[in-house]
Amino acid sequence: MTHVTGIGGVFFRAKDPRSVAQWYKDILDLDIGGEAMWRQEAGPAVYAPFKADTDYFGDRGQQFMINLRVNDLDGLIAMLKKKGVEVKTDPEWDATPEIGKFARIHDPAGTPIELWEPGKDCT
Image (cartoon, rainbow, N blue to C red; front, side, top):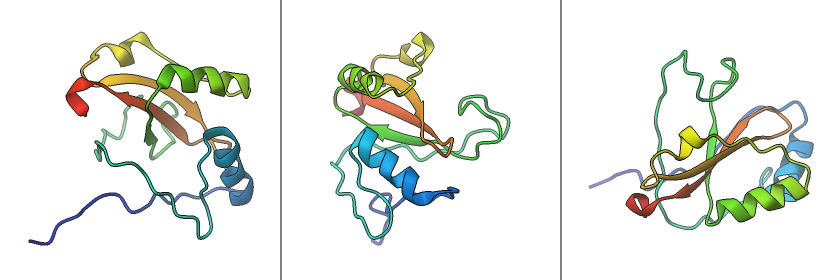
């Protein structure tokens, strides 16, 4: 039977796509933009709509949020802070350790990026 096998890409608008792509390379070591292909590791993913008035993304004008799966959230947070990136955490986000731990950053275009270290129920 034919079925979807995964997310094939995330596409978004930015006033300066080159500088945003460079930020992803410098800050998260992700080579994005142009013809770049990112070979991601297999693992869990969530694809879910939220209510239009959700505060979960932060700014209500933001129509989407990117969630990136990571293997060592604490280590990544330390690295991001050394690079001068503002990292937001909230104990409420980590209230269900079976699901995992979370942190939030924003790219230069203002896109919220949720960093997720999956818990034992998500591996």
